[in-house]
Image (cartoon, rainbow, N blue to C red; front, side, top):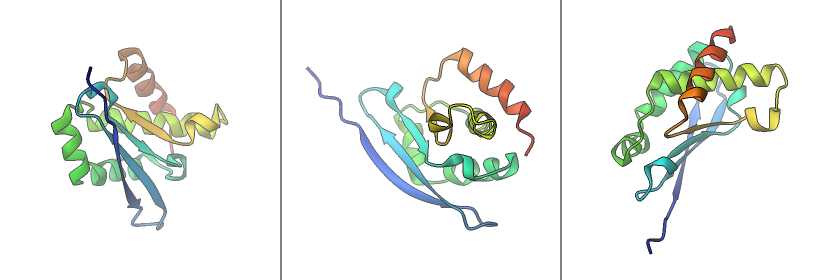
Length: 126
């Protein structure tokens, strides 16, 4: 019987314009790629699609993100941006704010959920 070990690493992302600092957690599991996850705490505080795109671009340049890819992380940058924008849109409407204040960019997100994030992200106009 294999023991699954999930490792958590944390980095800080600082928005270059506002100085806002967000905690970014990388969850690694070398046995089960479906358990790979990137969590951005208080992601709703970073407002605007351009700022989200810049943050995802920066995060994707980090060594931890490269390690996620090697471990089997398969999300595209566009899907990460869409999910974050969808969370921000829902949070701005006070929908399940406890769940939408952070964004969990899970590996192997179901197809229907990825489609929903794409559609919801279109309504996020900030």
